Length: 425
Image (cartoon, rainbow, N blue to C red; front, side, top):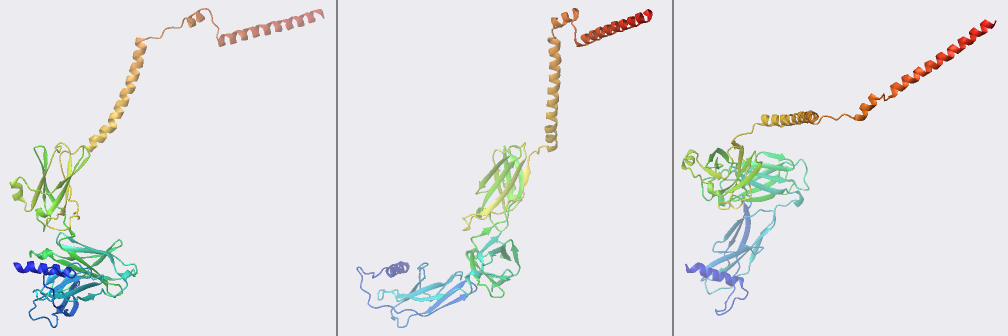
């Protein structure tokens, strides 16, 4: 158990310039490694290999330290090999040096660097927004957008590889949804406990080789989207709504996080409950359906219609990503449904009845007012009728009688004069 601690001390000396203080000064510089080479396996597995340094001290137990160009992912190991899964969209370099693990030589060797460049091609022709989602641990669906300098009739192809495959596979059916292209392939979870600790390597290119290939590495512990759960039963218990559902296949309950949505038709309320542990309190229900979860929704009115639906996502207890929700489950309802026909009929009839009642009441009140408070006669009209108050019609007829009387008198005078004239002759 002393050896790893000593290695850590040696690694600290490597990171310090000069590294003196109390110990014996180094006497020689360790020679560099030789024949450093790089190669690519599968789609995105980059492998560096090297040979031990020439002229190393026979008393030196060689150890090799390495890091990438950004001085990240440092490693100290006795193997003359190092590999890494990396998308080959950019240039990547590895620097390797050697040192002795004994006190005879503490000074590191000169670092040797070896790089690998991405495939040639116009960067503007490579696809963009390449991303993949593992659906229900059963199949993986990848999508991407065409590059800027790409012909509209480009025929894309997608290649994939993961540890359970013997060779690189090609995705057969390329489809288009809107502006996005995509392809899906079977990827079923196996019982091997280390399966999900690996990644899927993806490459998208075209058949003609006119666009620059684009790479992606999808860890199997991220970008996981479960299928929606299936609601099995709804029931009321002591004023609470008991919701029972079946989890999506390939998942265990402790790796999932739930949301239960309850909509009430009468109060028009919309409540969403977050559920971390969905254990069934009733053992009988849990035995009936395998992989069953339950939740008690408090304060639900049983005499109204309640509609329930559920969705689920992975949690960080089992997966790195917890942002991809499943689709909502099919709805299930419980309670009494309001009779919409009767409700609409009442809405139409009640206003008519109220309006008719108001009209009848107004007429009745008017008649009642006449009976209770009869009209008082006008004395002036009575006296005018008694003393011959002449209206317009009476005056008209009186004027007509006077005119006839005057006409008759004039006629009689003319007749009398005519008779007198005849008598004198």
